[in-house]
Length: 283
Ligand code: DGL
Image 1 (cartoon, rainbow, N blue to C red):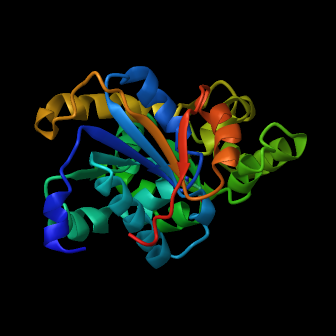
Image 2 (cartoon, rainbow, N blue to C red):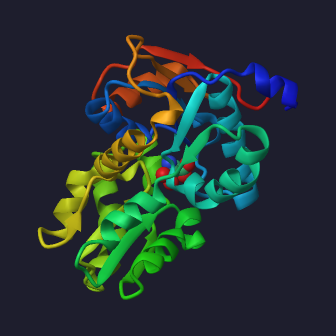
């Protein structure tokens, strides 16, 4: 990308929301509900999902391509809804890529706001479930410990859940059995709260709450992230994202738009109208 090209990309008042697939719609749903006055573009890199099994270098490269796509579409701010991409790519994007290529734009992730929410609760032990990559990165543990060194973090990966959900198997008894197996060690270790560290898992929120029991706090990450985003937007009027009459809601996927729409509407709990397939590798 050349500097000349950069200057021709005029920022618009659009918020980009990125996920490796459909999972980010569980977060986006809350943006639409709680912050409807903004313009949004959602990008799901469905063709290359799952990110959770890939190396840090690959996740960085994929996420960078997604950022380029969204910035070129005129996004002023991008929320990386994907925990895996937040864990493995966000810091480098903020420290190296943004200052060099898009110094006046912003990228935010989901791990810090979720860690803050939970670290502020009066609890001693927190459980985290996420993809292999997110759990192996230790990102939640690092952020929580920075905020409250006394909290013990028990983290476990649940790699089968994403493919099962993407396959439309979320409500099958087999999925419930697998979920129970993943959550059992965290229950045994008596965690007091559970962080759903993957955008797909809120789709199983009811089932997870049932398995964990009433005494364990399992919050919907999308709600928390939306409320944090509201505070951020209120503080950063210089980004020029405040409401317009336009109300853009455009969806892009790197895979089949029909599959995205069919399952995506279940994640979003709303109709998906403007959906287009895109290539983000040749920008
Ligand atoms: N969306 C990803 C996350 O929140 C999980 C899906 C994947 O493995 O690509 O971590």
